[in-house]
Length: 274
Image 1 (spheres, rainbow, N blue to C red):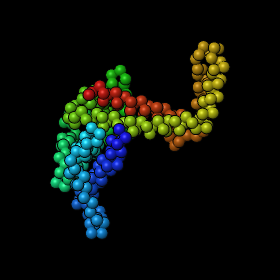
Image 2: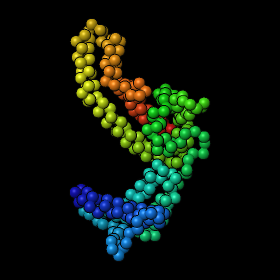
Image 3: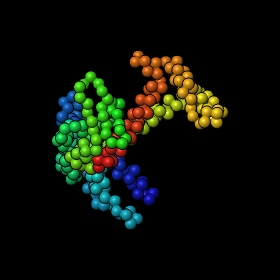
Image 4: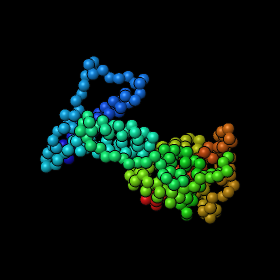
């Protein structure tokens, strides 16, 4: 296992990144005039095709096919990036053709269309703007439907299981893993903000003070948090400051928790639609 891990870390992974970078630079240098082109006389030429053309290596009974691993890496990378930005499908198509002519790598077509054919919100559009989606939509756990919050428009958008199923049927089941990964990355950032809020000295001291007082009077209060204490806590938080819209830190915290819940509901909706 040590030899396999070392081979992956020292040969396969760097080779995959180098080939991807080489394909990007060559395609972008042909498309963007302002991009500085490399000078092979001054900078030299690295022949990576030698590694790709190697025969499969046998390591202690296991076989490592470098060419197959590079092909799989480029397939996954190009598919995920095309799913996120479908308008770049032509660029990645040219990179696949260049990979075949330059390195002899036969990559798989993504077959991702520009969008769904039916009306309604598209899963790809939501994934690209997940931060906007969770802030502008409300989620119903019982019906598993997202409804847009009322605004200046006369109409509101909705998305349910049927719309998600249509998108998955159009784009392929591979979009599910990509969507979950992007939602996970968004949730990681929001939980970091949540933790930062709870560990703030002003907030934490008030929470500890309130928790201590409630534990001492839990029997008298019949384990019910009194409304007047909650109102007092809200007023104390408001004294810390408000924004231009008159929202306190506690109001921002409510919005943060709602956005986290909407993101989790979106993952649940993707799972139900798939």
